[in-house]
Image (tube, rainbow, N blue to C red; front, side):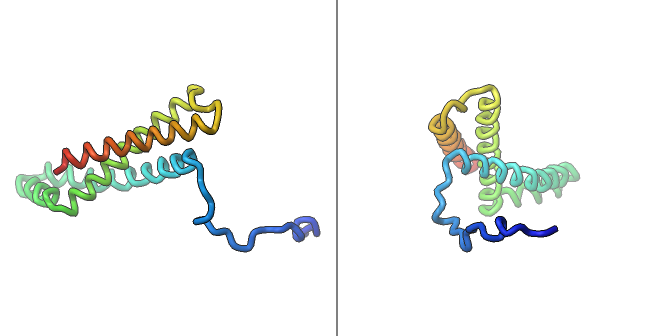
Length: 132
């Protein structure tokens, strides 16, 4: 395929500094919703393994209990619960947008994203209180 002179002479950025770009709250909300979905997908395998191990025998149950009582496991479980809370809040936000809400202006979309962030923060703190 032959390149035209018009395409070759276009001014393109040589270096794109992502730290200088200010993403709107809606873009951050969308990216985090995808990230939380991936976290939940990966954590599902770990949670199913823990569940299966706990049901195998009394020794397996004790192993899982001892593992979940460690600080590291509580932090991981808290992260999973936080990802689940965000994915739920972000999913409800997306469903409301599919129904036509928060689409009339960029400001309403940003506000709905901020509400999802705030609800996630509250749910994350409640999950932390519940775990510890």
